[in-house]
Amino acid sequence: ALRGSLAPESMKRSQSLNHQLSPQASYKVAILGANGGIGQPLSLLIKMSPLVSALHLYDIANVKGVAADLSHCNTPSQVLDFTGPAEMGNSLKGVNVVVIPAGVPRKPGMTRDDLFNINAGIVKTLVEAVADNCPDAFIQIISNPVNSTVPIAAEVLKKKGVYNPKKLFGVTTLDVVRANTFVAQKKNLKLIDVDVPVIGGHAGITILPLLSKTKPSVSFTDQEVEELTVRIQNAGTEVVEAKAGAGSATLSMAYAAARFVESSLRALDGDGDVYECSFIDSDLTDLPFFASRVKLGKNGVEEVISSDFHGLTEYEQKGLEALKPELKASIEKGITFANKQS
Ligand code: NAI
Image (cartoon, rainbow, N blue to C red; front, side):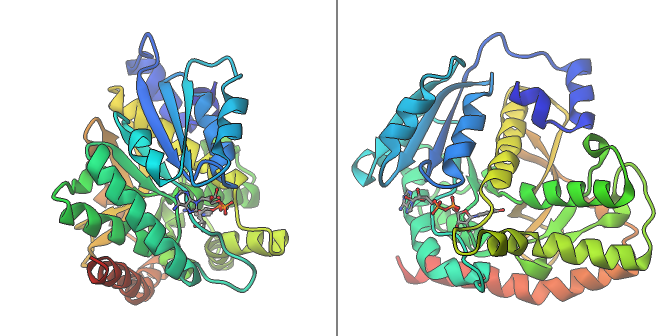
């Protein structure tokens, strides 16, 4: 099952010790942009979760076929389809988790910020509907540029009077997944054991892997640190270039988002030992939003893990200072957009 295959080893151990599966699936998940390159495989992976009772698939087109296809899988969740703005509200009623991979992806030569003009408006419209129909849900934003779309979502929710900073997440799990993979390859470690926290944001140099905090503890030469950091920061572009115009990461992104959704569902279900990195409303630095490790609970972010910040290497400290101006500008761009368009 998904639960077993996506959870890192540390999580699995804690599950078997102090957490029992609910007797039956009980959570409802909505995917907005479900017909897309990410949306389709993500829907499939979530359809495999034993914790999900209903999967609501929303897109502006062609989602009926995806839903019909998935509905034949003999896993517990019921699959419902919703097409276009007229059905958007109904896709959100009663859901516990909303995942948003709607919007255009990058092509070679583009930065994530180049997507802003199209995706900012899409995220704003979708989050307005979330605020009106399921303000209590966990909201998980995949649409790029995450560094700006999460602040946009926060402003929309504030305007609607329903902002809960503990339940709004920018999905940065793919950065962690990539860091774990690349570190395990480079150091010949058993992949399932490796866990690297990645902090900051989700674009270029704002992605800062804390290699010194890798678990299990492992030492790197300065050259390895430089190579791994740069590769993790540019991994999205590696995929964009390999796809040569056909889009950006979709399958690894779906895998990463499914892990984040599954972690959220386990937290909602009472597992007291769930940790993930995410880009959230945060007091950890002087920036209003920042990605770090967080403990997830029934009410969303239960604790921001500040201990990862203790004893950073000089390289990491420099990276942290270097990313702040860019991340600050992206956050402000999102806030300005959300407030201009009201
Ligand atoms: P895609 O173009 O294959 O799919 C996007 C889907 O969104 C399409 O089905 C489209 O119909 C739908 N859509 C467009 N406007 C919509 C609206 N107003 N309401 C509902 N659905 C709408 O794109 P792909 O590859 O799935 O990427 C989606 C987004 O995810 C992009 O913004 C991309 O940059 C981002 N992304 C984020 C990553 C992360 O780590 N957070 C990693 C990879 C991609």
